[in-house]
Length: 431
Image: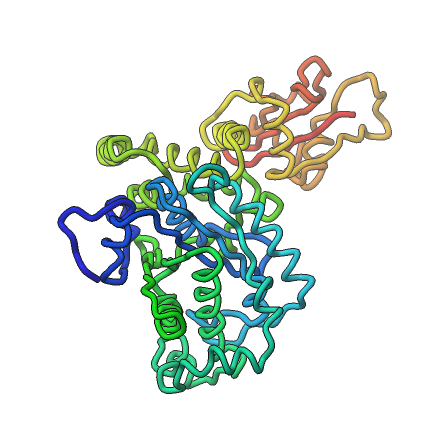
């Protein structure tokens, strides 16, 4: 990788944001010569992308903002094989119908980040369009002949698997990815492939194929693999699961909270990686972390920006509203209908059923609410909680005399927000 004193866009932007790992020597000159068409591949082995995919996505965003043309490739064909890079065992192969459903879901998610109109309009492609059409004989004759087994075994993605074994299926993955690059070079004029640093071997195999098959020059660029300051892998929730871009798999509130939970040691890097905030804005937020970390201004800016981009401005607003209630002593009386709907999915929720002995018009029995939510194990335990002053409803602390709540105290949508102590919440909806 060559170093330039004044690298052209987008290399300068990627370097400032610490997103530049390595690139081929001729890439700066290619950017200076005119518009570059570049692609990143996304593996459809799941029905959603996750936050670990955001680095290459943002790479495409910065490329387009610098006037170049991005291609997002959904691996409907290669997804049936699986990339061995960074894995210690064989992937479970998926059927074509599952891959197609996953690929379509990923297409919709990528469309939120890129501009598909204008002189450098982005394009979404699926390598199933050409890989599923090529015959094995044609592939071996026209592509396989350019690669020696020695060359392929020298790649890290293969070497790391030799001890435990690698199937011929996954062994050939780098040839399929190289074929993608050549096909996009022919179809779309692509001369740059980008990806994570673990993809360098696969990407340079594509450069080799383009050079030998067409006699032209192409380029590679990789992004760093991200870890947290404590050395743990980036992209896992506090429970250890992946943080998905699909709101059905990770709710916008949990997505927002993931970013709010960023360590002070990490948040400055994450602002550079995952937002389009300017250097001046990020520098100011860096200073806020140093001078007043308790306000978590940088985390708020990060969470709001990324949640808005992935979900929507309204989803970010609702997530912030729910977060303020649960963690910052927000006022339940100010909750919007959307925030109450979000709360129902995040905290214990129950529809109120009055006790058999209670007349429907006599109000809402707090003992019943506490037991329905599981906050109290029994009506006797609920009574003791009230006597001890440990319960509040809709922001107001209750006493032993407040066993029954009138309907006039219901929140919009006929809800009661029940709170035990400082952190245990539940929501009851009254029919």
